[in-house]
Image 1: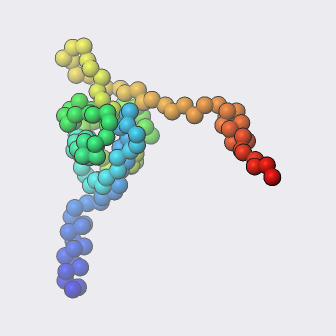
Image 2: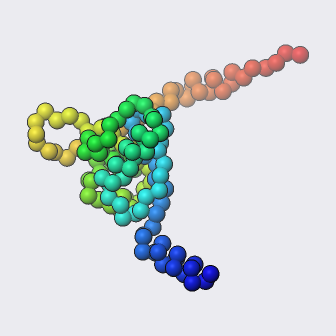
Length: 138
């Protein structure tokens, strides 16, 4: 029993650290969450996210070619992450998956992706809505 536990611990140390990430797909209802190895490449994470997205039957349909997408980290900046970088090197766990903009020519340039911001409305509207509680009459 002790020997079995010792082998299991050695195997987990060799595999590297694993952590849970959230990938939000622009235009989708919610994030996709899955566990990755910190040494996994960004391209592999994009591929895994697209497969999970398709497996769950989410809309809009994206396709399966990971070369058509970029992974962004809103905390680091709006520039797309390079596909050969390791996912654990950023120190964050929340990412956005965006479709690459279609280029006019065949020139490959660094891609900057505009991340849409949510609009929560004005604080006055929120305040009025929260005060508009229904009071039942006796």
